[in-house]
Length: 364
Length: 163
Length: 108
Image 1: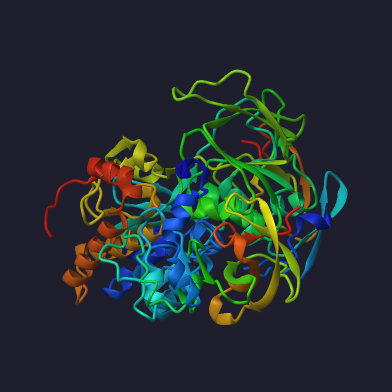
Image 2 (image 1 turned 135 degrees about the vertical axis):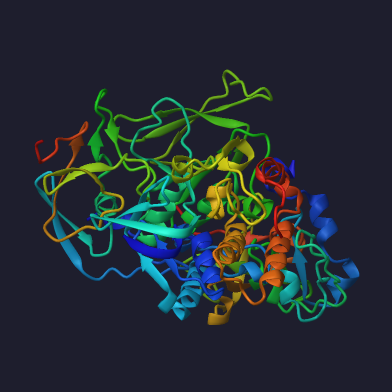
């Protein structure tokens, strides 16, 4: 059994920021991630981030990873980093089990921050399992981590921010995007992203869905169909397009399995991607000393995930006796940053979702 | 309409553009940011105090065209690639457009390339007069392009070679 | 190796592809690069079908590429159910398509 003060599960944007925040408060941290690189999905984001300077705006996601890792490096004596390590379970007696390079490890931390992120949703239509149909994140991994194109002609399903950004990245990789479709009557992502794809000649078909995929062993064609305002298919509006890749970008769902195993209260909140843990303003769940940060606490932009990480790291460290010298100032700042990131009209849904899971303040 | 196409209408474009009088006076930025999102790098980048400091990070940028000198700092810092810089009277016939460009291969100076409108349609051919891609621009190159004045309100970018 | 799927000139990123690794897929010779996963090396070589489903024998390719979805399970050096989207390619690996659940090497 290894003793740990604070265990952070997941080293994406939220987990990295949580580690920096906790360790700068004086806590000793164990940071585990199942991948062999740190940064989570940040390492695939070649675009400049939105937000303000505090959330590294106008910096590319790939470079934000470098900034955060350089920060982590400063505290390396107090951060134990386990890569290739999967958290298997969180038990009643406080033990967390980990699999590291086929070895089984048990740790008993005083507090835990779960920052496991989210997984991509799938979409139901005939032949949706054909090879050539990939999640948008998979396409990003292939292109932006390994330098391999997913194919030659792509249909993007979903015009949210991820769908729009990945379409642009596909073009940067030299792949033709035949069309972007979305079932909704309006584009879901930021319109600046939509405009920058549209002006390069990629059509965006709103109120369109995939009727079926066609192919014997892999995707060869996609059939699109329009839907009316009641989401019913409009007969006779089918369009067949030749594509060898279909990229599914219809949202993410929080990876809450560990929290549920532990018994943390979760609620189904569609605005936040599905089952999400309830939490207080410190990002502590219904169980003492179990904190959350990032997409696992509700799917949002990475900018918010980073601030949530800083806030949860600060509060988790405080909870186990390591109060940062500027605790009150920092906490106020992080809460204000989150508030302002979520203040705009594009965040109506997020605010509605958070209202359902945030348990009102105990100790501030 | 814009919400379902991503293509700004003529009316929106005209409202965003500087006045005719300002256009006569030389380089100026055109910021096509029509929807409130949490994003403020243009305002923090501006050294001329031309883009009003945001009260709320979700504010739309308001550009004082009189103060703007077309320096392009906001353009390379805009994560949405929503800014171009226009010098209407660069020559008798042509306006000079500076646009952000993140594709490879970059065109060469002197190339004639296909000019596109906001819907991605080929509307004119334009000449590349200058390419700037220093390290400080962080891979967002600036292309300077000669565009016939009649396309001032239509031209927005150039075709990229994805076949 | 199909050259056309490898990105040669990217506006933002550089890809270091240094050491070539040789491996076998369905007993034929293939090549990939050190540092990439099995699924990526196969994809770059034009292999899309990584296995077949248990009941309906449907073709399976990868879906999530981050080890979540189990769509890319293959037999690697005789071991079934290897998540090829997250396991790194190694020199001399023997990779086979997996049909259904695969059989464990050890017996109770």
